[in-house]
Image (tube, rainbow, N blue to C red; front, side):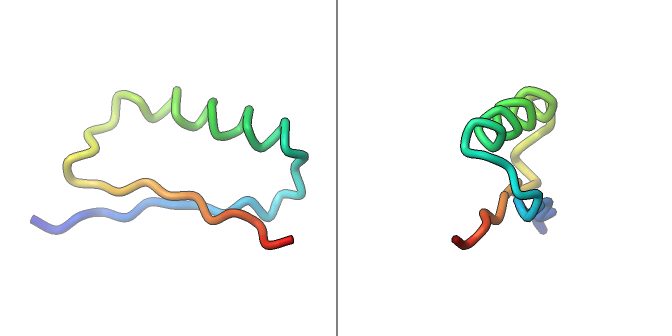
Length: 47
């Protein structure tokens, strides 16, 4: 079975606290998604 890769980046210039809140919210809103056929990922900023 093929996996669906679904991701995003953090080039939104968020603070550390804002980034942590964003990732917490993202985890919450995607908790009901079936992880068997998909891979979720975030690409962090490089600084």
